[in-house]
Length: 297
Image (cartoon, rainbow, N blue to C red):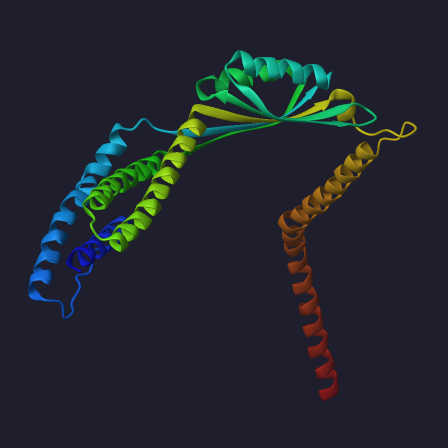
């Protein structure tokens, strides 16, 4: 009974340590000898679990870790021959130690349009982009972005050390277990810890590989397909552009006219109108006075 109680308490404490919580002490009607023994084992368990997360360790890891930047680029380019451009870009990626991870071709009446996704060593990204621009007749859109994942990597690294320390402690409990049921409980918890370890290692590997290899997304359009649509000499796109230009010119004329009226015409009219209005009011006042005198006479 004593061994079983010890292993149950030990596994519970390790579970709370992995979750980042302090392990609560059991308060019950157990004999004083068992309670004292559990407290002593709790102190022994807490010491190794606290080592990986001592103050300053995470900052030191962050300072020592090389920065991990995930870089991505997207380009929309126009080429003469889509298939030839796809072949050259694929050879370019392989020559730089990269590879094509996705390639799609869409055929239209005017030619083929392609979508490519490449992985290139991050240090060669700028060179690869320059070579792709040289292959293109026109670069319609280009964007390059970067995501710093160093902090996430350091956090996972710290958590992994904590999980591995917990795994070692659980393996020790497994070897010392004399009760079958207690051993099974430790084994269940050990499996959960090992699954977390594999997940943390997988995430760290993914971040490392993503930072080492940049991603380039290419939308490739042939020059024939990139030309504006024309039907019997009629260019709908050009007509639409001209209509917008005319509309903008009309709005520009209206705004300019309004500015001239407010800034120039209204003040000039006011200056001219004030004496005229004053003279009119003066004549009216004189006529009224003359009419009143006649009525009095």
